[in-house]
Image 1 (cartoon, rainbow, N blue to C red):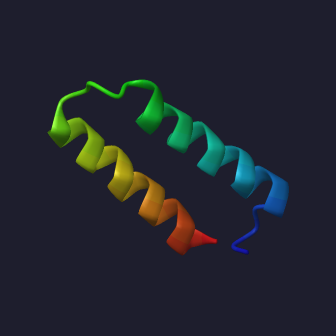
Image 2: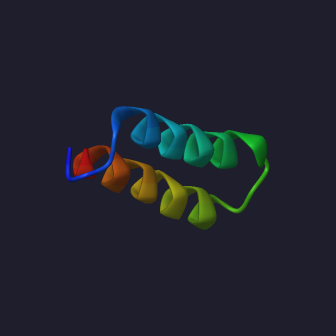
Length: 45
């Protein structure tokens, strides 16, 4: 788990996904970047 607990990982993913879906009408480039961050967080688990 790379030193982060499961609950911390879930909290991070929840924060990122909320950020992605909260701003539904955002610029596509920003959404692409946020999704890449989300994928990176998942890979770091």
